[in-house]
Length: 250
Image (cartoon, rainbow, N blue to C red; front, side, top):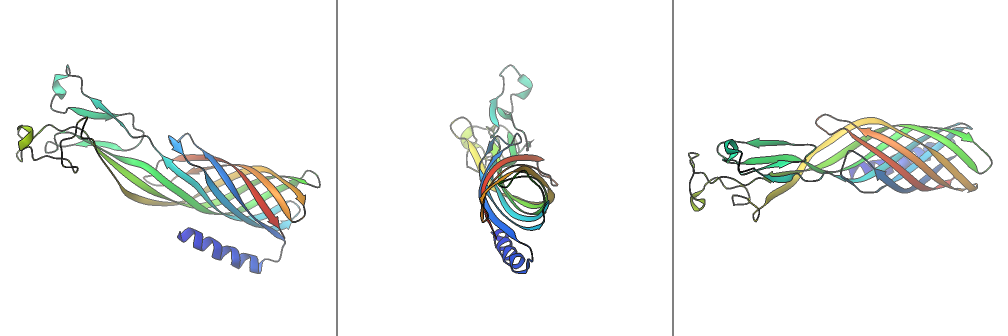
């Protein structure tokens, strides 16, 4: 929300002081990625100033949509693996996160990123080539100041019933219950989702496409774009997008 407020204040101040003709537009962003297992669609808003016949300055706000990782799989231990008999269950098939266990828990705990929402403010240049009177081709390069609000999931495997001293006891006497108040297992899955860290960084955001302008005051813009979100303690995420926008020129 703070990004949006800042963006619209920035738009008004720039447009009020701009000495060049320009444009304002917005549209739908179809986002794809190989980093995440599920990716929602987003939107973008762009505005710019025409510097000369081959260069525009451009600013924008973009929301890439929600991104999600699949949850890890619960994996029962093979009964033949006698050395693991004290840990009934574990996890597999996860791309981020980590497993932990302790003698007091009596089982594994998975903690990792499950989803995030990313958006950002962009500033850059658009290099344009006028193909004919109504068609313009362009290449864009921008700095993108982005943030991502994350959610963390904790998953608790089935636990061996233990007492306060770590000794095996009947289920009804166990004190090592998970945060859901049980020992887990197929009928008592314990999964807790909570707010995670908010990440901030600046990366390059590239794009290229075409602008069809049937009227002097209106144009349709189609663009392919790509950005790599890269921050400390954040999964390096490549987001590709295809956007269609309506622009008003003035």
